[in-house]
Length: 168
Image 1 (tube, helix red, strand yellow):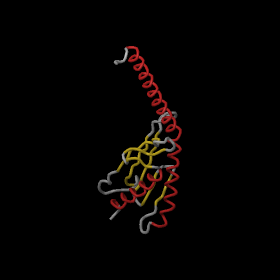
Image 2 (tube, one colour):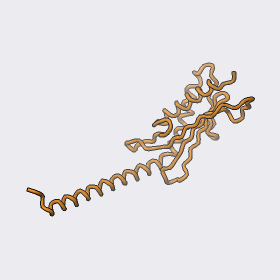
Image 3 (cartoon, rainbow, N blue to C red):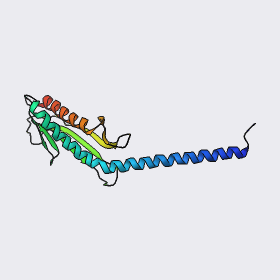
């Protein structure tokens, strides 16, 4: 027996209500995620810097003949030999989730070269919430990394850059 028009209209209204409830839930989740990123992006960048200092202190005694890492939080620069990594974190809107972390690897700015200096390598990331919205990860050119993974990447990539461009 075919549905009566009244039953079909009732089902249509129920589906409409379910759709609106789902849209509201999605908007609410996005607002919570944005608030979490806004509240935690800068503190996570600060933790990244602390993690870098900790890893430098751990690895410097064991890196053999390589020049030791030097970290200057004031300039956001990590140096190894004549090469540096710069970190630049920008969060232009204090109560918004927009942010950007630029990591650049290149020659020390005070080096003098007789030829062209080696080219810099740059990566762009931003702080994002994990799926469970309980911690921050860095997402972008390098995929998705925790601060611990990113600090290891920075030190490994700086060493690789140094080895490729060290003075002969």
